[in-house]
Length: 395
Image (tube, rainbow, N blue to C red; front, side):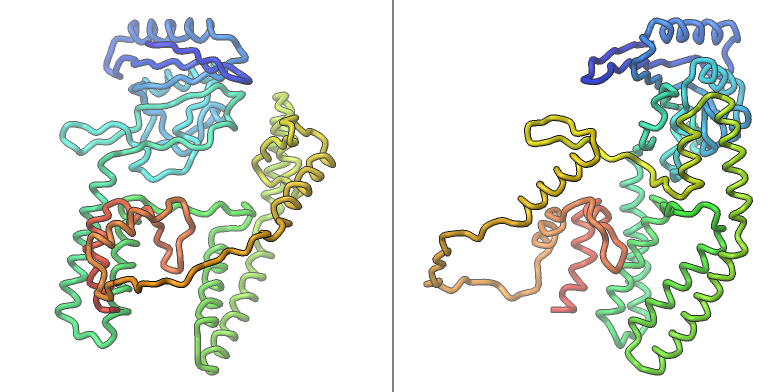
């Protein structure tokens, strides 16, 4: 067990790294470990940001009945004895198990593999003090094998699509090649990384209604892409029917039940003295809760602005300076080129494609194909090998 205390600007951080005994160990040894861990926690100042982490050899599962302040419902597996000890310890010491709070793909949760490769469990858990629960933005296992698995999956899928192209006559080669590349990347990423579900802005709307809304969006997209008047009229009728269906479904959703559930939850949190949660639930019911908080706003001298009018004035000042730049006084004198550059018009070479892929910026929105740049940058050599035939065909 190792304890580290870091000095911060606004608050200090205390981190405890520990490695308890396995589930098959003696009960006395387990009790001694948790007594030692509790002594360490008792010695930490209450106002510190407390983080407890390590290989805890504990499966906590996904059932948080009677422990909803200690863990979420997004764990894996079934709780066992070590897991029960850990959950009880966290409940007594106001700790929250971070790995159970966020929806993640299974590959980003399971931290232990058996030697035979058959059994996988989530036994490593980061925990944080209860008063800092909202500060946790996400908990994710970074597995080095995911990158290799994605490469292998992509190679296999692309090879299968190439074999299909060779056996199937093709009249539209460019579009077919592009479609196969998008399909290979999409299916490989779904298999290896999973699909992140969108957060519903209105939780009381049922999943069936969201599916209908998605169908309406697809119909609208087909209508905009249609070139013939007949197809446009047909999709317009389909879109109208889909809109009516969505309205009917929305009226039949259990919004009243959702509001009653929130009201009950507000009463329970008020009885426990959690005024922050009561305020949050009240704003949700009123439709004024948008989640998150805005960052601090400072003036030019670095002074923190807390009054809303001062913040608005600072934003106005900022955009006035940014958007009202004076034109340059000196007009640039661009000389006409004396020599013509020798630019090759041959199809791009593999090393050129690799260089272009590596220069792509990460964390950018994808295009119409919904493929992020990170997918291409996983293996730039493989990406170049996949894209080069398509570029040659277009050339």
